[in-house]
Length: 233
Length: 254
Image 1: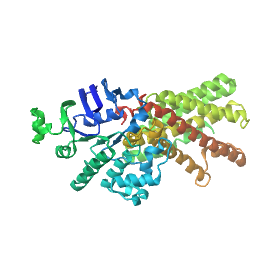
Image 2: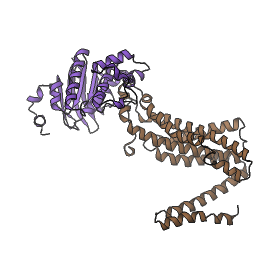
Image 3: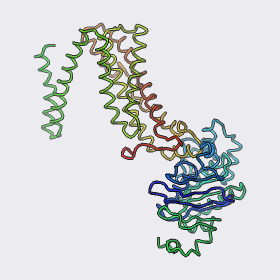
Image 4: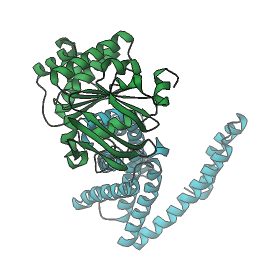
């Protein structure tokens, strides 16, 4: 069943008439070279950007027909650089609750950390003192505070070394299956996309060239995709 | 002071001019322009003030204050370019701060309702408001550029614009107010403040001068707080659209 749909979406000079669907409870990767419009697509799903023409539908309804703050609680996003507010890991995990006038229970915070294989002692560590890999994990844990239906991941492993990349991939796959959520993951790394995806969208220069179950990427007849697979572009 | 004495004070212009020439600092033209401008501007202000004080008309007092606000706004608006609607925000802030402070001063009869009191004090209020707004906008723009990702993060989590910029706003307000507070802490220890010195030179009783200076210090603290808070809280909504998306500063200012 489809949870999200892009209908003829264009945005500035970045996206051109994108139409495609995203299946519920699956990991879909947005793949393609830099400047393809992957992150723009992701931000549109969270409502951080709007389409100039066309619309993005969540469960069949335009995302801006929902109360946007509530929708964003339900469609959570982890950013490429794992931005953090000054303070401790707990302060950052509490941020999604805090902005809605609530306080995150420390036990729940510890539980969220365990989801990303970090122990409770991290709660009181200052974020400026933790490593890049730990930041990525905290960022990932933070997206789960409101138990969202959709998780948007924007190049979350781009600055990590190979071992950490594989670790984060393992965590996301485990979280997706345990929490039965829909994950949409932007990556320019084709090998990563092949490892984690159920489905793929291949974007280039703001156009969706092909979409479907991840296997299509190897069999595609599209010369642009073939060149990307061969590492030529 | 006679005109001859004033003419002799040009020695204090000749010294930096001589140094600039000798060291080839390239500042000679600026020093001459600054000197000529200050002489002309202050002489004009002197004549206008004499006219306003003698006429004792409320309309002229208001016109004089509006003139100060217009000049200060023009200065601040340049620094705030990139924030939509900043001109109106600055004018509104200056008018409100002036109205509130003068309302309190006159309402409680802290100062007499005389142009000789109202105009110089208004000048200090508006001038201080201008400097604080400049400091605040400078810091706010740096903060916004630096915190863009955190702003988007908070929006993406379902936060409102005020949640997204509250850290940047508070930090900018704090930074712009600190110089005023710090200057107040060392007041009288490091240097005698300008107004107090002026009164003492003019022959006023030093204790009377101190009381006036304290009044101005407290006034400046209020204007500092009001200016930065008002400019900040009126500006930030302009950085977002109705869909709670961050528009940010216009491209040319980033």
